[in-house]
Length: 230
Image (cartoon, rainbow, N blue to C red):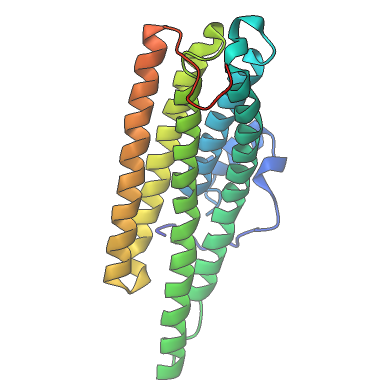
């Protein structure tokens, strides 16, 4: 949580209600939010949207009928991920506001110092868990992209590669926001556990994204997923 700007944080405005240009303009401004956490979540939402697009472009097409169950499952799953990640973009701003409020607490007496330290640690945990949820969502995005590769509209296959790359960007960007908050937790064991958990998920995201890219580049059709009706 390194964005120690001396500005107020408007946590009532939703980033999803801004135009793309308005969001980018805010991101480039000197205001504390949106920041890297929101940008990571937005990147993830774009990846999820691309997954949904490919599934929608494949649904109902006779050529891909054997994968109909996958398409029917991927469309609502991608839509839910988009909504979740847009919400996480706003959640990042709320977490920053909470951290900023904790930093401004009085510290004149020992009691006030103790209360401030406890509040900072609680706010740091919230600021850690928000991007961690983006990390987790990124794994879901890339898993869907990998499943659809070779089982969806071939004309949109490159969009699956882009979706996977967006998931990696979202994941690693969100992971950076997790890591910067860990020292403020005041709990070395918890910080280590969260770091290791985040790295495991991020490594999996990168591995599955690489597999997706290989599948897209090969361009070969794949059998239906086990358990899906042919």
